[in-house]
Image 1 (cartoon, one colour):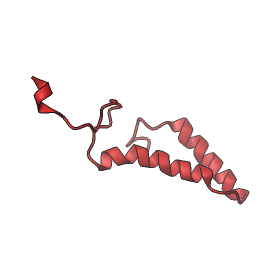
Image 2 (cartoon, helix red, strand yellow):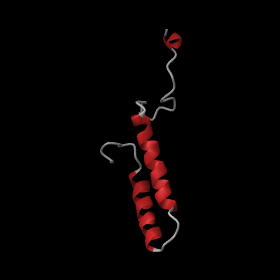
Image 3 (cartoon, helix red, strand yellow):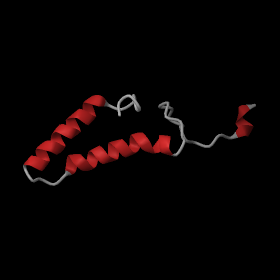
Image 4 (tube, one colour):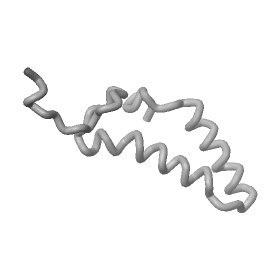
Length: 69
């Protein structure tokens, strides 16, 4: 996963996985598991939609060809 998505926050994912395992062991609601899903969705959705994932704040915005002059 980290090879395919180098922009992923390794430390955040590691912490969320550890928290999800702890929650499961204590029969708590799966808050960290849900957060893992949201993080992975945010990482993978732009690529699945064919959008740029360069970290550009305008990634995925439509290109207005009139502005390219």
